[in-house]
Length: 113
Image 1: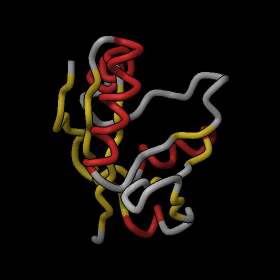
Image 2: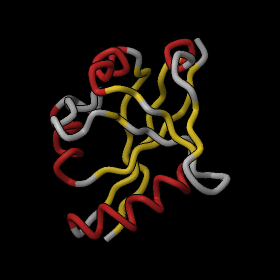
Image 3: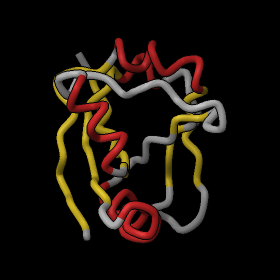
């Protein structure tokens, strides 16, 4: 089975919900969050965690998880800035399907304060 490694910067509240799932699922999006934005590399995720999560919550985490490549092939990769600013845009209503296609656990690979 081919997988794609994704990264997601997150704050403490979202990480707590991931922990409650056994590190297996992302929580549903809030009404003002119509898109789930995992990114393609740890550098970009670290930049977001440091610039935005610390500002909002005093701590930012970087997570890493694998998703079945055939599932992710339905989404177009988005470049939103510099060469390494690439991410996937998954509509909120498709987040449960993404969760069903996670292979293994969601891991915390960085913490910034």
